[in-house]
Image 1 (tube, one colour):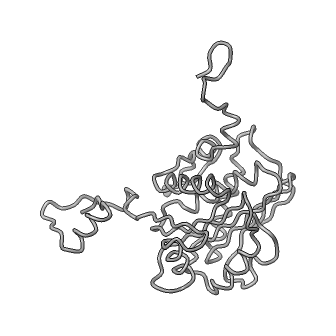
Image 2 (image 1 turned 90 degrees about the horizontal axis):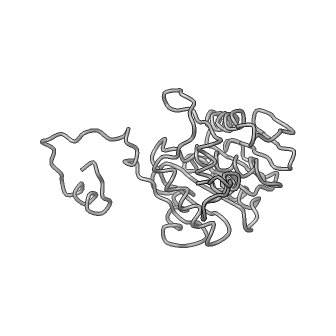
Image 3 (image 1 turned 90 degrees about the vertical axis):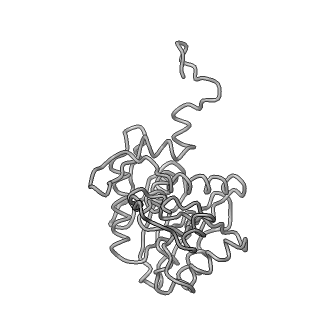
Length: 261
């Protein structure tokens, strides 16, 4: 805590430095999100988002880059987290290009609306002036930008280099093999690049399934982040007093600490 001299206590970074180096701090202070009840509030990371952030930061510190595949439940905030993280990076660093690819046009529009909300609600001390703006692009004067696209277009993501890439609901992409091959070739295998692929499950087989299985087995650069659905309080209800478990449910409780059993 700052004293009368204005000095900051030992070990405590100044707020300006934390805004540039700690996404969780920046999110609380600078980002606004729309809740499921249509309220616009400050972005306080939930349990799933905090876990994802910790895994990303751990990998980034170990390897200098991020290569993460996220298997998750529905509406746990992974896209909200990733769009916020990438907006934080491109708005505060020179020469970074973020590209977001979703499974359908409505999702593309929703994610870009989220990014636009982040930008429009920036406090004056972090607001960055835009050079160009369209329905799918934010471009800053410091040569960084943010673009979104839809996987239904076979050529999506092939035309330009990106340092930050988010694949949303990859398991539901049409032509997923072709899309990922093209997009990942556009992301340099260098430090300070980030690739986050996330999706709910869509059965056995397909490119996202392969990425999950390879990451789980430790094959390749991607690391698996599994976020169980029961981390969301709204997906749980009180267990009836006469409820009894079967063998499969006891296995889940024993191996995954499932709190609903």
